[in-house]
Image (cartoon, rainbow, N blue to C red; front, top):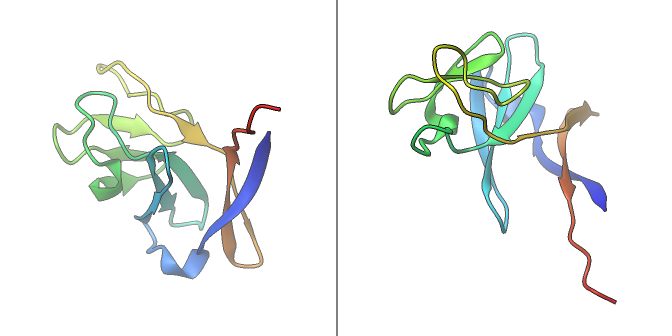
Amino acid sequence: MSKWIEVVELNKIPVLGSRLIKTRDMDIAVFRGSDDQVFAIRDACPHKGGPLSQGIMHGTSVTCPLHNWKIDLTSGNALAPDNGCSNVFPVKVEGGKVYLQLVIEEAPA
C-alpha cells in the first residue's frame, strides 16, 4: 500500500537546495529546482553512500559531495561515465506543501 505523506513546506526548501527527511528505513533528500520543481531521492550516492542532500544541484541532477558523481534526480541513475542508481520517490506539491509517496508496510493479518 502506498500513501502520500506531507513532509515539508515548499518555501522551507531553498531554491537549488534540499531538505533531509528521515524515515524509519532511510533518509530521503528533497530538492527544489529554480523553477520550483521538486525531486525526492534516497540520501545515499550509489558509489560510496555519500549524502546527496549535501551536494550541489544543477538542472535536474545533483553532484555528490564525496567523489563528484552526478546523479539524475528524475531517475536516480548516475550520469556517464559513472554507473549506479539510487531510489527516487514520487513527489508532489499542493497548497505550498510537499508530499512524498512512500510504500507503507501493512502488518500481516
